[in-house]
Structures are given as structure tokens and as C-alpha cells.
Length: 275
Image 1 (cartoon, one colour):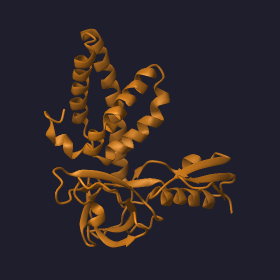
Image 2: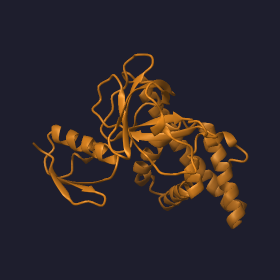
Image 3: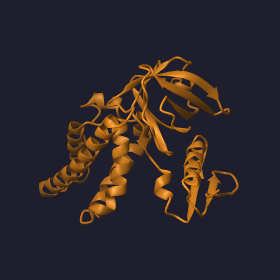
């Protein structure tokens, strides 16, 4: 696919291509779809999560056709199931693609129409860079145009276009939002990853550098947990701040019950949701 459409290297995470994560995720999604072909409502939570991720990459409807054609070619090459089976898979893929295309169009419109929202990318400047630990650095970002920015819920993230010196292609990365929305800017947490074979990433970028950013997207939301009497949250590294924001929002919303915060590699910690 990348040999025929190298422009997709600007969208797909090439690290996930190298380690096989992207291929596994795609075929797992296809398998889940096939298993629930007669019960599509069961797929809606997964569809929503994937659609949110896709819109952070600015996926376009025509790109579904590219992926679909190469998916069918791969099935034919690996399994030779016959034209009738390939036609059936092509039809099923088209139905699923249309579900994503429709939902993603709604997300684009919602993000553009909300107060402080925008469509596509928007230029932001790094106004403050603060080391939080040996691994974690926080970045405070404000829009270059000086206009308000869209609010967000705990658990959401920003997608950022990056092309550091030495990178062959643009990289798109998602980072957790780590402070309460204020309508003026955003703060994200970035974890340093060791990898001597790769050029330096955004951790090394200086204050006042500019990034192209998409509106906040939803990954998890504390509101989806509010009906539960007991909640569990496993966290590690930069994910701690995102979980704490969800926990704080639940407590302030008046939710009752208890919950467990589980640091990876650490001890259990119990936190009451009500105050």
C-alpha cells in the first residue's frame, strides 16, 4: 500500500507499521466486524473510539477506498478465497467504511461549530516547557491567532503534526490534556522514549516553537463512568494526570461510590469519588 500510495506515510504511524501493531489492529477490527455482522450495535463503542482517532489524523473518505482495495488484494494473495468471497468482503468493507465516513463527518462538523473550535489544523506556539520528571515534560500551548480555543472533557487528547529535523515523513502524535480547560490554551504531557536509532522528537523542541494541532478528541471520559458505584483506573507515566483529571471531575460532579487507582508496578491506592 505504501509503495503505491507513499503519501499515506504522512498519516499512518510508521513506528506501528514497523512493529506490526497497525496490521494487528486492522485485522482485529475486521475480525470483530465479521463476528458481529448481524449485530452492528455491539460495534458502536469501538466505532466511536476509532472514528475519534481517525479524525485526529484528518482521514478523508477517499482513503477508505485505498485501504479497502489493498486489504482485498492481501486477502486474495494470502488465502485465494475466490471472487465470490472477495466480493462479499468488499461489500462488507464498504458498509463499515460508510459508517465511519458518516460518523467522522459529524465529528468534523461538531469540532468546527463549537465555541473556540476549528476545522483542520491550527497553529499553536509553545509558551512554556516544564520538566516534570526525568521522563515527563509538560508543554503549554496557545494559538498563534490569539483567539479562544475549544473546551474539552477530562480524558481527551490533542493530535499534533510533527516533522522534527531528520524525520523523512510528517508524524502525527496524540498527547493527553493535563489541566482544566480555560478557553485560552492547552497543556499536554509528553513522555521521553529511548530509541537511539531515531531522530530527537518533540521533547527537544524549544519554547516558542510552533505546532499544527487538531481540536481535542475523546479517548475516555469521566462522564461515561459516572453511573458506576465502583470504578477502576489503571495508570502509568503521563497517563496519571489524565486519570486524576477524570477522578477530579467525577468528584466535583457529585458522583458517589469508591474507586481504585492502580499505578502500574506500584501499590493499590483507594480514593473516594465523593467529597
